[in-house]
Image 1 (cartoon, rainbow, N blue to C red):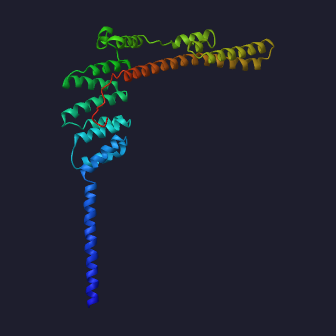
Image 2 (image 1 turned 180 degrees about the vertical axis):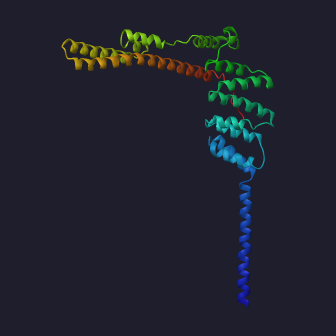
Image 3 (image 1 turned 90 degrees about the horizontal axis):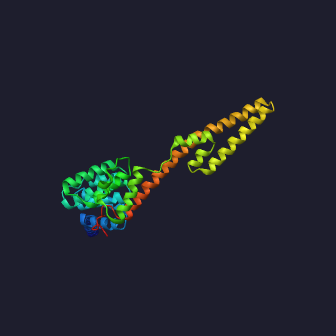
Length: 292
């Protein structure tokens, strides 16, 4: 009987001990995963550049209570990871906080610039002017965007009115380039190669290909003529066909080479404008309160 009582007492002691330990750990886990700690951990991850895990922490907090500051950091995390479409979507969720709503609109404009959607960028800037007043940097960004797509430019004095000093001189050069880009004419290249094989390629800055086209076309033309003069008709027609193939291909290739040349000119121009834009900080300021 006594043995049974002792055994029961032991079991009860163990049971209550386990219950106490469970409650203790549950309380510690609740403390560990409460909103305050998860927010602090998310902020740490964000400032360390671990944006993906920071997003998970912030979203966990937002699932139970809304916070515009955390939502702004989620959107900023996507921006810094280069996922600009997602950053735009997340910035659009910020409405309650007036200051953050203003920053979110600016950051959305930055995101539209990054994905090259300049039409929407300009629409957003126009809305921003109406709702919050005009910004000099936004005016410049608007004008820069006109250089980067097929948009028509306004009259030069109007366009340059937002710029001063050395910057105005540089933008004036970009303006002149956009109005009259140094493109070459594909039709001219084709005609040049029709007259002198390879000349159109040289015109398109493909000097090596131009010389090769001239030599090959000339060689097979010479062989064809030689075979015909020596009554080797079959081989004459073979070499003539090869010469005709190189001749016609050279004409088409010259026009294509000029098109590639022009595309390269446009690409380099866009990169130059973007580099100057970033170098001169003619962008929207990055919010400093996040971690910097």
